[in-house]
Amino acid sequence: MKIGEKIKTIRLSKGIKQIELAKMAGISNTYLSDIEKGRTNPSIKTLAKIVHALGAEDDWNIFLKENYVKIEHKSQETA
Image 1 (cartoon, helix red, strand yellow):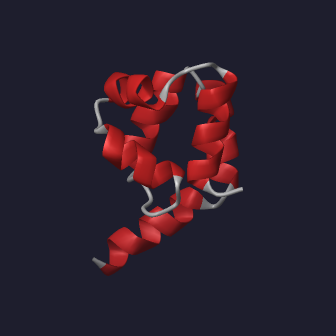
Image 2 (tube, rainbow, N blue to C red):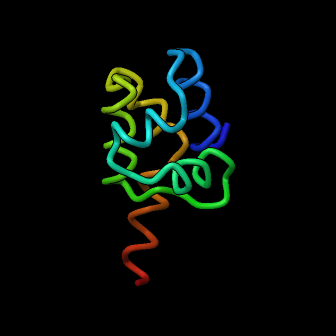
């Protein structure tokens, strides 16, 4: 499961509207929509905000399991 799909799954399981999560995470609803639809990937910092807003800190390993941190780190090295 991709990172955006996972965020959406957790958000829906908690009954949180997309606009509410975006506001709690301090990001735009459009950006969150793009993340959930897989059009873009959040930075680690933004991902942490979303995870915190979802109250899903215990699920952090689920996000890391996707090898997301390694991908993000590598993209920063090439920038």
